[in-house]
Length: 370
Image 1 (cartoon, helix red, strand yellow):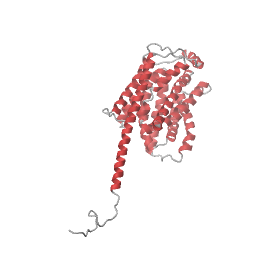
Image 2: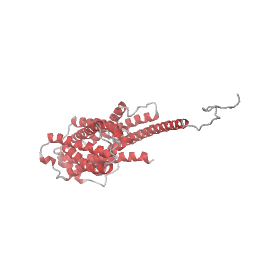
Image 3: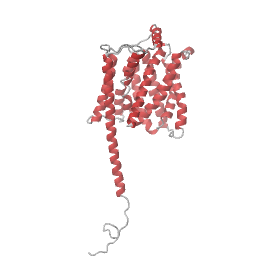
Image 4: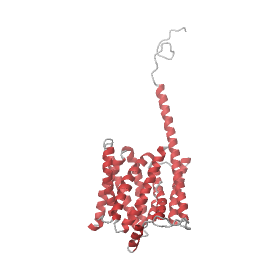
């Protein structure tokens, strides 16, 4: 039981961390912080946070580095870190957290298609497990779209007693200089979801030959720090743009680096190694539900009928995918156990028997009557 609950809890923690990042990062960007600068600081803080864990926990067990693994780490840093985060934060700047989260929920569909193409998942549409995975993916994506673009009537929950006045202040200050681009924002977020799905596929392959999540994540964030800094410096030269004097800038950078990169990537790598890329990606729609609740509690945003229906669809979609994956894994384990038993029985049959001269099937000569 614990073996099935732990990955679920790990993915819920990741989505909770991302929900907080969406709010704090949007406030930091509204304060004037460039998205590329924020992404760069995120990788730097993540690298610093991961270094002691990688050294203390895996220095004696880390596998030997090969050219193939080095290339996979480089590809992971380009897709899952630099490419994904730069595109997502640019999309967040030119849209809203709700739209960014909604479009990012194309991730399960992208991952499902890529996983099937690279034979990391199988449709098995004639089995209950395969039907459940396909139906769950459709429900999760559909629920995310419904939650984002259909409101309906306001739910009568009243106002939350918790309120973040700092967010109101930042919203008023940013309203005069707010930027939006109906094309660039959504396209950037969709691009981030696509390269994020590619990272899941690469990570699933790398985790088999390099099962050291702290060390691989450290290398990935370190390389991404160099990549992001080079890109950010080419766009933003002013020293003031790199200043962390603002509380929200420092808080957002630290939070994104330590929680949403260092911790999240380790948990993602660990779960992908055990459950596969589709299992991990299907939890992304849960982020919309969490953000909807946080926005109602902290920012006094209203909850609508569409929010409730979309949340229910997302939860059902998660359940179907998890049920389908569990059914397939149980079947695979049963087959492996059967094969193991057959091999053991075969080995027993091949064991040498003691010599018996009166055994007609033996090699000795029987001297009985004809």
